[in-house]
Image (cartoon, rainbow, N blue to C red; front, side, top):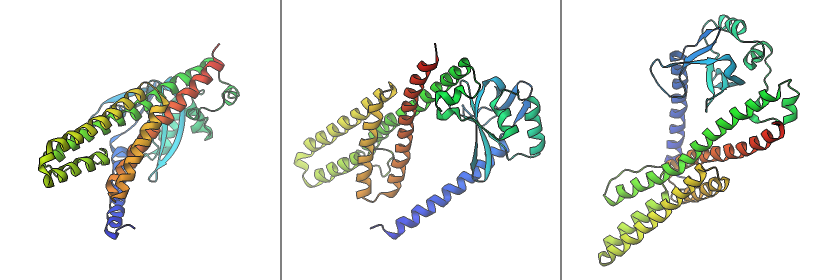
Length: 302
C-alpha cells in the first residue's frame, strides 16, 4: 500500500527531527543559565522566545505548581507561574547540581510547592484540576485554591487561543497556495487545505483541455476556495470566542482534508496535518478545562 521510498523519507525525516530536538535541548541547556536569590529565580524570558539576554524574575510567590519532566534524557522542572501562559522550564541537569539544590532549599519558602518537591519528591499537580476535595485536603486555604483556578484559567485561555489561531493560519496558507498554483509556482504550504489544491489543479487541467469554459471553471474554483476558506475563518472566530463546537467541527473538517492527502499518499502533508490537528485538539482540551475550572471555582468561592 505504501511505496518503499516514502517510508525511507519518513524514517529519515524522523531521525533528523530527533537529532534536531537533541541539539536544541543541548543549546537550551547551555544558553539558559539560572540565577537564584532570595526573591526568586532569574531565567531567560522563555515567554518571548528571545535569543538574547532578556532576563526575567520568577518570584517564589508566583510559583503555584511544579511538575518534573524528562526530555531526551535531560531532566527539567516545569514551573507553573502566575501570569504565564506556558510553564517555565528549569533544567535540572546542571553543573554543580548539588550546589544548585542546596541554593533552592536555602532560598525557596517552606510553603512553596517547589520546596516541597525538592525536599520530599512529592507534587500536587493542580494543573490537572484535581477534585476540590483533594485540594481542600492539601491544607490550602480557599484563597489559595481560588488563586490556583484563576491562574489555570489564564493558562487555559492562552492555550485555547493558540488552538484557534490554527484555523486562521490554515485559511491564510490555503489562500497563498491557491495564488501560487494559479500563477504557476512550484511550491506550496503543506498546512494549507489539500482539497483546495486538488480543486485548483483540476481547474487548470480542465482549462488546458477545454479553454472555451476557462472563465467559468476558474469562477467555480475560486468560489469553492472562498467558501471553504470562509468557513475556516468563521470557525476560527467562534473558537476564539470560546465555543467548544467550533473546535470539534474544525477538527472534523481538517481530518477529512487529511483523508484526501492519504488517498494521494502525500505523507509529508499528512504529518503536517497531524501536527495541526494536535494543536487544534489542545485548544479543545483547554476549552474543556476552562469550563471545568469555572464550575469548580463556583463551588468553592463564597
